[in-house]
Image (cartoon, rainbow, N blue to C red; front, top):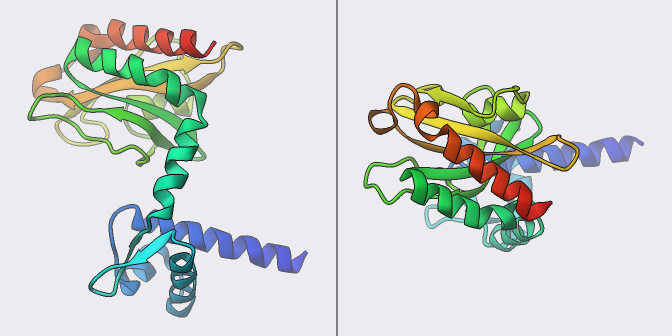
Length: 214
């Protein structure tokens, strides 16, 4: 049992290093500061992750996410039915609203961007696929934290200054919320009440995803 607990602790620390590197390449000192993992342990685990291709060394001797994660990420996305179904719906949502569209799923106490389609506007919001964001901020986060009865939720400068969003819950056949689909863009274009303008289009995208999966 003790060996099992130690093994889980190693896994937790390794995941913490990967999540720290998701923010960008870092030196060993940067990883220690971001994770509070002791320097010898951080170096040992980072080196092991390099050996597995999950992390790579940078030209300046630091660490960055490795190429093995690209294939794993694609395999994960392809194996998630909501992601496959959401592609056409998100593309249609971008065309209907002119804003960037995203699909999020809950991951513990956070949300993960499973799919993202960018607006054609020069000034637009960009959320990279795979990004991990808090549940406590943004319209999609609030939906996944505890789905409201309203068909859509809006937020204005909640997660980031100058950004507004509108999201709707995506439900399975039992009515449980399994994802949140929405748009985000600059407040100057979406206005102080983005839901009034784009709520119906976002809800239509959620229904389209549900129909495609159901």
